[in-house]
Length: 431
Image (cartoon, rainbow, N blue to C red):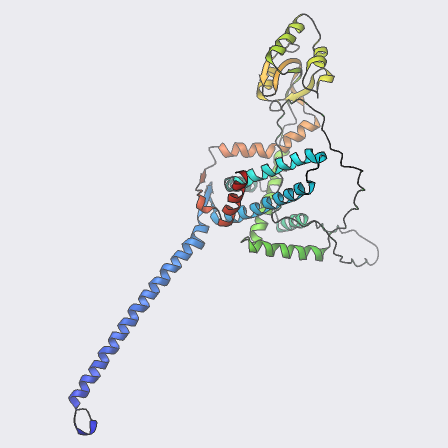
């Protein structure tokens, strides 16, 4: 180095070139690191999208080209799972309060049966909820075809009813109306997932009727006073807390309202289909004697062949306590109201003839056909049953109708983790 510490021009140029080279290397390094970081972020973003958005938006089923998402499936299963668990816990609590009181044996057995039924519902919840989703979409498409709609206000009213709030009916009055006082009164809090009760499909089976045993629980309790209607402010407060509880379970208010809308739409389609049910049809009138064994039926058949009266034998021999005192009379009935073996025999018989012994799941029958009409009006009870069964029958036919293209893409991984834990707990309760 020259005296005085100064660099020569040549050395100064070398140092500048080195610094420039080092700067370029640093820029290249930072660029490479930035690219790697960007790639990592991109991979993470893709993974997040696939896990939290892509998978949730993927179809779990498809109905006539309409895709049903995993997101909706998960919301529904969480919702119904919470409802079933709430019912199960309530049953368990009631059961525990009975203790070992022998007088409560009947109710204890009832609660145990109900608890077992709820456990089975929870275990089969994912598959059942998928089928329910498919049914709802079939209902939605049929309702659209019939121009049946559900308004926002109708959904609001149904939500209000779920919480026990009923809007006041405006009544014209003369003069100023008194100001309503908003009072909060104790009311029954709705469960996390109020569920629509399925309408029972009439079986029309012939079962021996036995008296219902009602346990005596002591002195008759004084009826509780009618609950004061829930005020608007109380309803709004309760609904707000309910929606907050939904959010904690990853269920949005939109998900909740969609379920309510589906329920209302089902009811509307049920009414429309019920109004189309035929009010008359082929019916027969018959009476029967129910036996425990085939041999008993053969012995009675021999007595009838000797001229003994059918009604008299029914009173003497029939195991069906519901009809024996009326000579085994079952009245008029149409197709689909009795078990198949009984129905086939009754409709095939000539009027006033007695069948050979007919075996069914309930025993052995001797049937006497006492009347037949090709187009007899249904009685009120039968017509009501047919109307109630209209939607169920329509759904059963729609599910197998080749015109409806239904595809299922269900996988166990679609079931939410929290629901899987609930199912596992219920499975352990059976072990």
